[in-house]
Length: 387
Image (cartoon, rainbow, N blue to C red; front, side):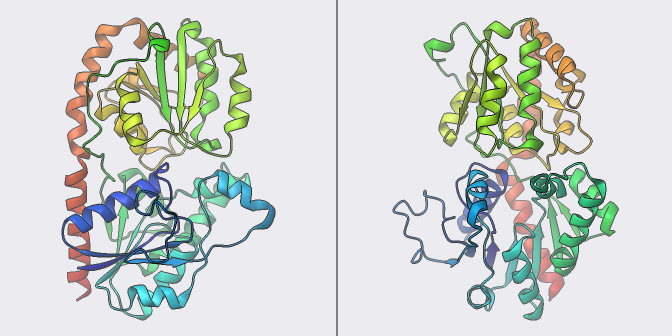
């Protein structure tokens, strides 16, 4: 097949959408498919284009970005840019392809969806953005009406044109279909790269006598980093807990200030894939306090290495479904309950070892290659259905 992948967001692999897009692109190419990528200027991963020159990169169709003036810095802190929908470039990219796949329902995705419909191209679309991921930026994350209107807008502008929709979890499929009705749905995990596996790692000397607690996630409100900070401040092990927040985002300075109450200063840093794998394998616990989450590949990466998680039971997060026992869950935004769960696992190393082994078996359903095989099947079925 000749497939066009449309990415409003495609930059550093430090967010779930970019990771999912790059994994899909690499997998399709490895299977022998011809892949074209439409994305905004400044969003080509450096691994593909180390010198920063993007215009001549084969099979990449580059559109310009919006200049938002004083808001540019805020958007940049979130690790994204906003793509301008250049119809001439979109046409060049999709005119002779067999199928078009959209990653997100934003400006570039909307324009491509309309053009694909006009050209009668088979169209699939991924669901990688919860309403709250958008309404959070206009300070209406908990406003039900705002989230309802956002989903309706997504459907009207993109998903009603789609022949098939890829949902990374059943949770987000059910959430969306409650509002827009039945869709042609494929529930497929984004999958975890095989590199994320349990291995022996020498812990740095500075951490030898510490408990390492890891959370990987963008520094933004819906990820609820402050809940973990407050919980650790209440732990009986607080003087020995080293928090590590792997990621990037606009709230870094605010979170650093909030964490001054802790005995040990948390580490805020973006880590490469290999650095992250080593970090997971020398950590004691993984805590995922996020209130809003479609799937949370970062949590799956941790448990694929056998790291025991403690996950928020938020009704707006699919990640809660990764818990295999009661101690893997805590009440959403309840710092006392989270603190108790942290203390439980640190006080019961034998039970933690048993739970770790259980997660090593649990991870098989999220195998990256199997998930990418399912994505290929979705494309082939959609193409056949359209014919």
